[in-house]
Amino acid sequence: MMHERELIYDAKGQLHRADKKYKRGDKGAKQTMIHDRELVYDAKGAIHRTDVEKKDKSSMSKHWYRNA
Image 1 (spheres, rainbow, N blue to C red):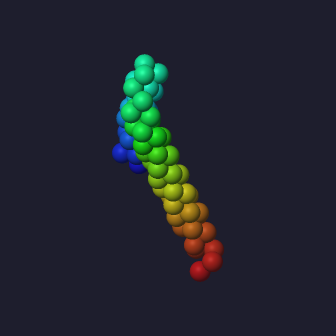
Image 2: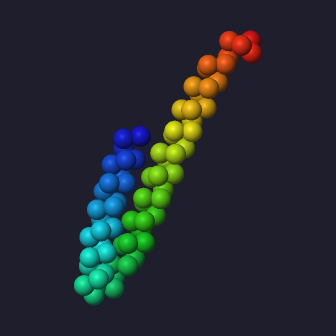
């Protein structure tokens, strides 16, 4: 999960730099900005799925002995 958080941090930095370039007039930076937003979205989704998985496993193990 730490890897995904690092990806978000890096992608946000790249997004910020691409935004600065785009505002200065580099129109090619727009595609970079779109790609970086997708990276952030994907990494956040991966973190969410990991958290949900952990929660599901812990709730199953908590109640396992009651159902057996």
